Length: 158
Image 1 (cartoon, rainbow, N blue to C red):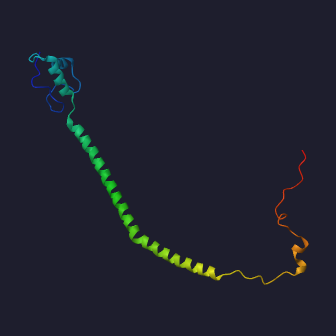
Image 2 (tube, one colour; image 1 turned 90 degrees about the vertical axis):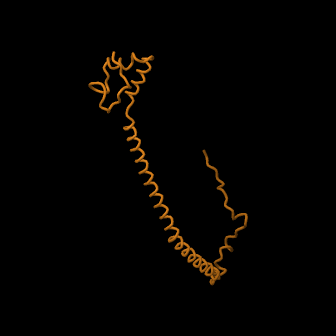
């Protein structure tokens, strides 16, 4: 058997097994697992196999970097939205609130005028009095007890 010597090559480095780097043939796998020069052949072979099968950190780093860039872009959009809301709020406070205060003062003046007009208004005294001949009370006397509404006295027959 040949010693591997110095560790297993990583994918993408150009040095390695013939053929596909992802599929190991049985001889190459056996060479990685058993190393005659070292006292613990299985452990060192397993370690070398693990190093060989571990993917390059560059692809993962690129994916993480892309995710971070996306999150930073979203954060920037959120900050610009918050700034826009802040500017709209300050515009409302500076422009619209004084207009509303002026309208409130105007309405208070109108309410004061309405109150004064209501004080001046008194109900007009009746200018016409019915002659005694036509008074209903004379022909249909009403007592306080009779004025309340009565329920019909007749009962239904079943």
